[in-house]
Amino acid sequence: MTLTIRVVAPDKILWDSEAEEVILPSTTGQLGILSGHAPLLTALDIGVMRVRPGKDWVPIALMGGFAEVEDNEVTILVNAAERGETIDKDAARKALEEAQIRLDQAESGEDRQEKIQANKAMKKARARFQAAGGAV
Image (cartoon, rainbow, N blue to C red; front, side, top):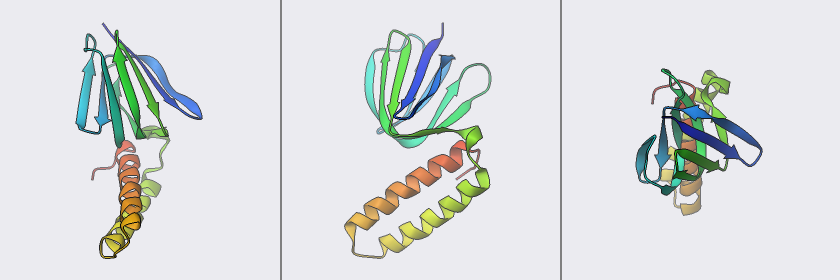
């Protein structure tokens, strides 16, 4: 049996197809879903979702959201998402390096809001780089 997986962002439907398996970046850790999974509603963190429609995995960078699993259907509502093959790996690496510098600077400062924003920017940059095929 297969899963029907839909990834819906505010501006587009990024994925709407069947797959054998999906791994989601939930707020409590990586969550693997196979057919026959129990009903579930979970919050998603910023990270990389991996979907396996055949023998190969397709990485998708997710920018937070929610996932619902019911009757072999996985509906994923996200703030934003990008398929790994559409991300420029070199640009993503540069953005990750810049995010790390910003985070290091924020960590040494006193501004709590800046630390939160820098940490979020770092997570987004890391997810995009990993989805593009980079190793962190």
